[in-house]
Image 1 (cartoon, rainbow, N blue to C red):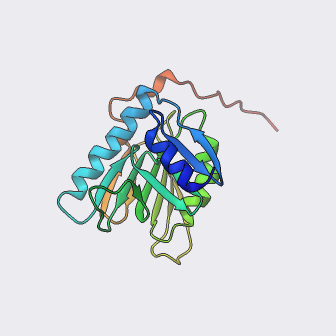
Image 2 (image 1 turned 90 degrees about the vertical axis):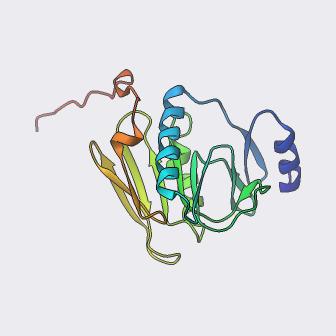
Length: 190
């Protein structure tokens, strides 16, 4: 399928699809947990953006990550002018994906590489759906080196472009993390 065919197909479909190198992938539904986490992030970042130049978009806005790659990130911060009738974002500053059992590998692999290749992206945040943990990938400028950071527990995440921080307590507000058990770590004696 060509990009133009994909765009026409996706616009008329009741189900959203991502497009990577000519292949089309249907977006599955999300759990309430996933939706709560995403919503918490959108609400907090929207408050931080206020009436400034940046806007926060949720998972219904498509991102062109490359000429042959289109995704629907869970959250994006965009600080360049956009038209109200635009259906595709091309210059996000921050991209956020909330993991799920079916997407965690892609979020940490394929999407990590794609988002880091977008010159405007200053941060890519991978938010774990099982525990209070955010994996952050940061850079200060388009050609700067990427830095990986992991924030857990009661930590805070820096959000570039908005000059703000998100606490993990805000991200995971009203999310019952105890219902997904983490595997037990077995201690072995040497």
